[in-house]
Each structure stands twice: as C-alpha cells, then as structure tokens.
Length: 401
Image (cartoon, rainbow, N blue to C red; front, side):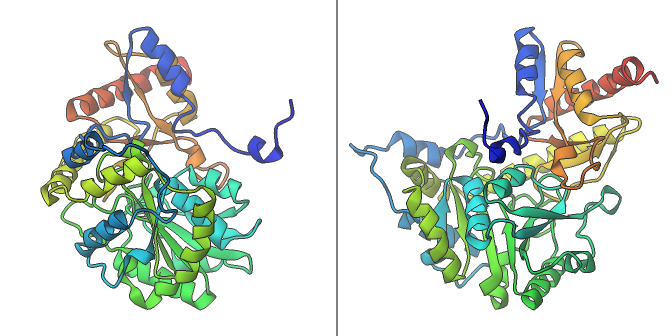
C-alpha cells in the first residue's frame, strides 16, 4: 500500500533504529552496553515516586490544557535559582515532554516551507518535528576542531531571508555537550531583534554544566522577552524520561495563546505524571547536585578512555551527558552494525548512535558517533575496551587495514 509522501520522507531515528540488532545480540547472550540513548540509570527522586504511589483519585480526569497550576507555580520557584525572575504561571504551558514543546513551537511560529536556522550537529529528532510542521531546517555547521562552539554570527545572518522564522539552539547541547555563553546568546538575541525573528532554546540539560561553569538561561534576558521561547523538560534532571512532562516558557503572550490552541486540541498533558513532576520539584537541591557530580565523573572516565584509543578524536563536553567522537572508520553506521552483529569482547559489545543523521548537511558526520555517558563508570570503562578492540577488528576484517 502507498504511504503518504510526508511519512515516506521521514528518517528512522539513528538513536533507536539499531534496536533490533541489539535485541538479537542479547538473545545470543551478549551483554550490550548502551551508549546510544540518554536514558539515565540515576534513580528518580523518591518524592516523585511517592506521589504516584499516593495518587488516590477515583477518576483520572482531564486536566487543564495549559497544565496544572500547582506544577506551573512550582516551576517558577525552581527557575529562581537560575536568576530567572519576572515570570508568572501564565508564562508556562505544560507539554507532553520537550518533544511536544518543540513541535508546538514550530507549528505556532511557522507556515509550511518557512525556515528555522539550526547549528549542526543537532538533536536528530528535531528533523522529524520540523517535517511534521513542514518546516525547513537551515544548517550552520559547528566543528569538533573548535569544540563545537557557536559559529560566527555572520554565518547565521547570511542564512536569514524572508522565510526565516527563528533560530533553534540546545544548551547545554545534545549531541555535542557545548554550553553557549552569555556573550554568544546575547549576540544571537541582537541578531534576532534586528531581523524580527525568534530564538528558541532547548534548556533540558541546564543543570548539567561541568568544571565549575555556570549556566546562562535564555530567560534571563528580559529586554528580549518578546522573541524568546524556552523549551524545558523533567526527563533528564529528575531521571523521569518516561513521564513525558515538558514545558514551553515565554513572556510572549501571543505565542502562548497561539500554542494553547494546539494544546486544547490534544486536550491535556498526562495528569498522574504532572503530579509526580510537581513532587519532584520538592526534592532537596542536593539531589541535582549529586547527579551533576556523578555525570561529571562519568564524562571524565569515558572521555579519557576514548582519547587513549588510536585514531579516535573527541572534544571535552562542557555540559549535558553526550559527546561526538570521530572514529577511524569508513562509515560509523556500518561499524555500529558490526559491533552488534559480528563482535563481542568477553561477551560484551557496545551500542552507540551514528552521527550522520545529526547533520542537515549531506556528507557530514559519516565517521562520527554520539555517545551518552549515562551508565556507571565500570560499564563505561568496559565500553571503551570494547570499542578499542572492535575498531581494531573492524579495520582489519572490513576495511582491510
């Protein structure tokens, strides 16, 4: 049967499309070490779990389309620790995860065939959100040799035309781990002001900045309030990926009123999960501090081990819990399949996400891969050993080197 042209144009997720091969490896008794997906092994705060256990409503009713008031007020208090003031609950629209927040942003700001500028490599699922909204992503390439820092502002400006509706960032960045500075953000905001476009920033990983560095939120520039949209989520900071609770945060009332039309069409975000998210916000500040310290140790463990592997290049991520590595192979996806189908070290192998689909520009990223350091240090050390041995075997048996 003929499927729609729309769905035929979608790509399968490079993060998940190799899952059948991982499942097959596991059926053979091989232990697959998952570095492909940002699913933390950190325990969800007990406050959130207890809220679910204590949920005693007799009916799980529809809630408010914009999200429960208690949750939105809780977020206001949470944001104050990042110096974000001057918001109220009406500046927040709760969504079904950060994914829906991004989808709503595209569909609220753009007509079909409008454009959004995005630094690449980028979170690959954004391509699907853009396709659904019929939005064209226009890339500006950041490079590993520069630590994936923000490209020159002139590169962004050269891509702006009458169809450009905004610029999309992720900070701290998935997949590169770069954290955009106050100076970088202000330069982009001034560019957006000059051209009357929006700056949308995914801040899902804001808690995870390393080496003593602080985080600058896009919401801390009230003078640019009318053109700023923040995307948020509970998935990572509280290890609640499956709860699917996110948010759009903006001082632009027209944006929120328009996005609310989409929210009303899908009725409401998940009610029980909102109760859990509200409770998670009451977890001690020590919880997030411990999680950040844990990820920083894991980052150091895996990066140092990877940097010792001959031919592997990677930069030190400043935040989030991902990094991009360039591998001494002809094709990272081909190597990923080799690791799952044809290789194991002492009964272990590694799954990672090939990075070619993290780029809009064709031909980039073919030898690169994204790795997530969300598992314990012992597993990370074994993963690096597997990768080193696997690279040696692949280069000999497949590449003939």
